[in-house]
Length: 96
Image (cartoon, rainbow, N blue to C red; front, side, top):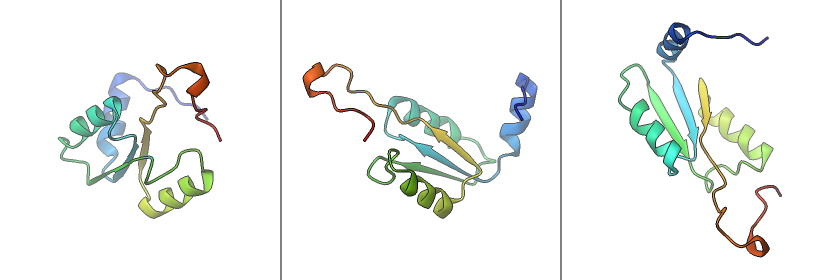
């Protein structure tokens, strides 16, 4: 079921997340900025940032294992494939 939230609803939803948050791509521009904002919130108990070396997003079994281990209340995927400036011949597909 899809539920639409208003700005006030989103604020309430965010304040009710007093558990762990898992962020993928914590070293990227978006992930790093998110961490800076989230870490300033007193109602967040723990933020776990996982790099590619810690959780391979192309491997569903690895994702399930890490999510079960961390048991986050919220997952934010800020990981991205950013090698867009490389020549076409040397680009690696983000999929396996």
